Image (cartoon, rainbow, N blue to C red; front, top):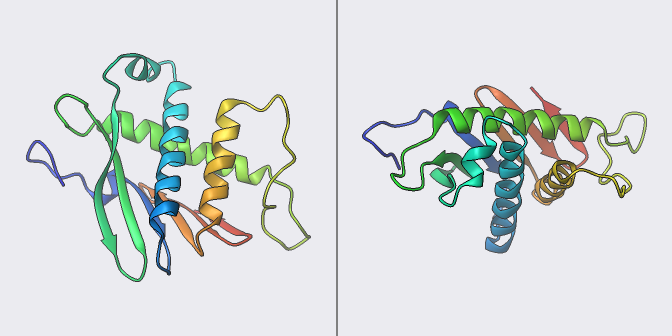
Length: 167
C-alpha cells in the first residue's frame, strides 16, 4: 500500500517477522497493540516529536505491507492522519529510538546462566519508567512467538526463546 504515488522501500519501514508457525489473531492483535503503545511512548519521549502526539489528529501507525513466506512479516510506518502520507522523518526517528531502547532494555535483563540468553523477566520495580514498562511488554509479547525479528534500516533484533541477537 502506497500513498502519494511514491512507494517506501522495505528498509524505510519497521518490519516485524514472526514464525515459522501459524500466528493466532489474538496474539497478533496483542502484539500490535503493545508495539504501537511502545512506539508512541518512544516518540513522546522526544522533545521534537512530542508535539505531533499532543494534537488531536495524531500520526497513525499503519501496516504498510504484509508478506508471508513460512512466517508472517509486517511492515509498519507512521502516516499523516489527514492525508495518509507516510511521515518518513517521524518513522525513522521513532523506529531507531525504539530499537535502541528495546536492545538496551533486554541487555539489562539478568542472564539465567553463564551461557544463557536474557532472562524472561526482571523483578518489577516501583520506580520503572513508562518506557521501561512498554519495553518489557514488547519483549514479553515477542517471546510468545517461536521466533520474532524486528528490523529497520539494516538493524535487527531477533528473539528466539532465551536467545537474542542484535545486529
